[in-house]
Amino acid sequence: MRMSDLIDKKKYDSELSYDEIQYIINGYVEGTIPDYQVSAWLMAVFFNGMSEEEAYYLTKAMIESGDQLDLTAISKSKVDKHSTGGVGDKVSLIIAPIIACFDLAMAKMSGRGLGLTGGTIDKLESIPNINVEQPVDTFIDTVKSVGFALIGQTGNLVPADKKLYALRDVTGTVDSIPLIASSIVSKKIAAGNDIILLDVKFGQGAFMKDAESAKELAASMIGIGGRFNKRFAALITDMNQPLGSMVGNAFEVYESVEILKGRGNPQLRRICVETVAYLLRLSEQYADLDEAMEKINQVIDDGSAYNKFADYVHAFGGSLDVFEDESWVFSASDKHEIKALSSGFIHHVDAETVGRAAMIAGAGREKKEDSIDHHAGIQLIKQHGDEVQEGEVVAYVYTNKAIAPAILNELQRAVHIETNAPAQHSHIYAYME
Ligand code: URA
Image 1 (cartoon, protein in one colour):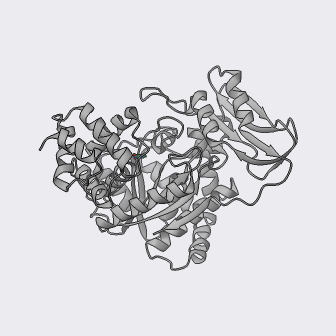
Image 2 (cartoon, rainbow, N blue to C red):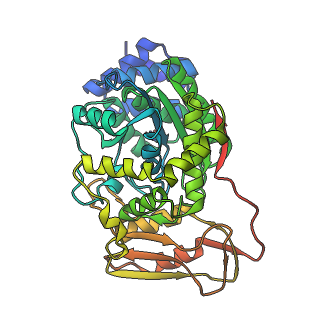
Image 3 (tube, rainbow, N blue to C red):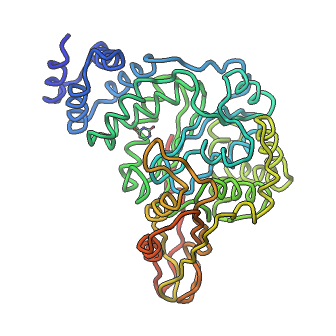
């Protein structure tokens, strides 16, 4: 087989066989096929797409490039929720301990953040003394005893994706549906869970800019996942505005604790309750979403879900006590006020601008090697639907470094205010199985 022939074949829109795709993936991982040839093939895929069969072959070859996690020691059904990345997205932190209150387990590996959206592991590391880099046996033991565990990536899962993603990032080939689908599904299958709920976001702060392309991506992932005999389903959700009121690492753990203590942003609570309800229905714990939501609200209100979160943090050496102290959470040296430019109702707050401002304030990384300030970020005081007066504070930016006035002005303009109240807005746009 010759790579130049396979590039030609894809260039003229023919389908590649499993052996051909495996040849490309193995050759790239082993270093016998160079970046420039794989780049040409990726660009041909970008323009010509892939059949579902080919996307499945690519996913399979990527999984086989590394190890697969064996979670069979955990007897309960293992569920995972995967988000395609959102600004202020702390949903995993909130729903994992809720899920652990039911007859399910959540064994989740997460990554660090790059760019506008923060990584779950960075958020967790704002908890003093916690160690989320754990060996697999401790991970499995914690899932068995607590009901869930979130840890950093471990083992050599899908090395092909690491290499391919880095190449896609610099060759303009990230936003291709079969490439995104095979990248995500390969990691989910290799991580060993049985039931996977995908949260596919669309809007300004997301890979998919509109709901229809998010649905197309979701359908592709559900189709590929089904070929591995795993249950995949997807929520299509709106990422035009940040999730909840807090963006930044310690801030997001603080907001998660608030929700689990029955306090905090009611919109965020509703999103989390609905997400878990879909997972409980998908895993056949409840046939009815309303009944599931009633039970979920119960485990939040009686403190069980918070206790699960505290048990998990304790198992990995940390404590949540400091999150009761707001002067510790909001301890950054500078606090900038963002004021409403006019009077009226907030229609939306641009997630992308908020994510960028939080990153510049120190909450995220522009480059892989940048360090993170856990106490930098943004607190949104007012959100979609709220009435505001001109000059009223709508957000605070917390930072330990000098921040250019242009960034603060941009953030001010990201809060869109109109004279009429906006129409009711639903975060979950569609559900697909
Ligand atoms: N997230 C992934 O894991 N892979 C992609 O290709 C895009 C988003």
